[in-house]
Image (cartoon, rainbow, N blue to C red):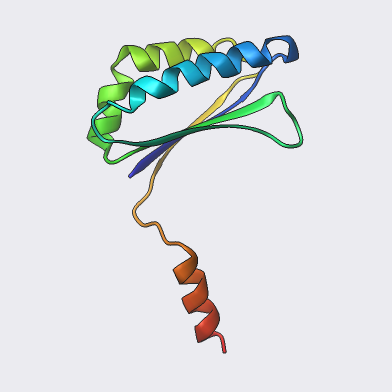
Amino acid sequence: MVQVTLAMVVYPRRREEMIHALRSLMLPLLAAPGFISCRLFRDADNPNTIFYVEEWHSQGDLELQIRSTHYSRLLSIMEEAAEPPELRLNWVTEVRGLEYVEAARVCDR
């Protein structure tokens, strides 16, 4: 799995516009090959910081999107940020949940 994380500080007067622009990118992703999920968050301590997260099954699936108009639009939105945005691509090899925490706690006894 590949996770794309964008952290972006936006101008207060353009915050809702930027959120709307990012939301408009989300719906078309539902039909994209290899798409897992997409989420949009605001920082609880700084409402002008927005986090946009996409998850893809494989690097190949993500690369198809990077070459699409979707990413052209995403890059254009990033250019409107109040500060240089941070874009991270994380290759996730394993995901564990609460069962791992439960097992770890049992082993500690």
